[in-house]
Figure 1 (cartoon, rainbow over the protein chains, first blue to last red):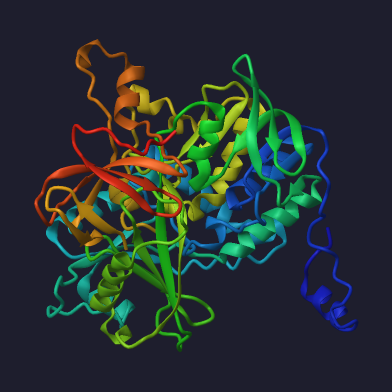
Figure 2: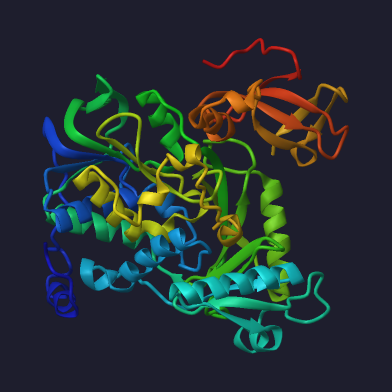
Length: 417
Length: 94
């Protein structure tokens, strides 16, 4: 792998940047792999990278039906935080957060991780109580999270309407200062490049159409382009399409796929140097380095695979944003899109064994999977290497929907982001 | 935005008036006490989630407040038919 550096940039400028090495190979798949990962998004690529790096398993293929990082990895609004309520989730998301903190150096790829803080505004007494509870829980878990009152909040975010005149006046907010955002595409590309360098085959335009299962055990997958590819173990990391793949394997998941939208405005001068979310008026916003406002919306309440959502949702979201930031009322929106999120009934993911032996699923990240990318990949790689889950991933088994040990994060998951 | 025909009101109305209550035709086990954890978990949480035809339960929340069923394509979002509770669909998902 060609190492990226300031000196390298200078050196290549002398040859007009025409001699850069290809970022990853474009291999023809082998007939047999130790591990096949279905889904070349952020989570799948991270899984492949950690399999090769931490477990020394390099005979691995990532099968992607489109192009790498072309699904939710390039559609999300890039928020990273770890202030969840329950110990199980706090451990999971904090594991991820700590990987985020060293990720750019580790991958030698600038993922533009910016710890600019994430605020959750409170508009009612109930909001205040639940956020104070969250802050207290996080303190006990050793995760930074603090409350600020409306006066302090107004000082920290001048453009936010903290006055008494708002329709739902802001009473305070919780803030995780280590939280922030990152460049979504760079995360997928960085993992892809690093995984490829360790010998992982990244197979693009390769759609899985069936699974080879005999005696309740998976032996390979059938692809549209390359026929049957054999594997000892198969990991499914396909977000919105998890239900489709589970159906191929002959079981159902406690997951439903919904369209989730986001939108960005025209680029404007910098005025917001952090991320603000409101569960109550239901919207959130940050400003990208390019200057556009990145705005998130809620999900459509019905099952949908169309990668687009309803206009009604956009209207509600914009109402919430203008309510919080009246100065944005005349900003024009540039683009709007949808991604398909796989939501679990308890708003926590599934990193688990399945009824089929040697077939594993990593899904159900719902509306907040981006922040989990490094942690998810790291833990799922452990599951695929050992055949049994890492202690942090153990509570996130599919079995919890039978035992009743749900990890209810609807409060901390909050507005879909 | 879906344009939905309410079989009770006999009119097309905008999606905003409705609320989707999830997969249709899920019968509550007659004897919940007799269910194993496996069966009860499946009844509560496990869903079809198809990419294609899907039978759903909807409620006309800001209208007549009555429930009805809908067969809808989850990829094209085309509504194939609506039918009342207790009726069976004429367009059947696989």
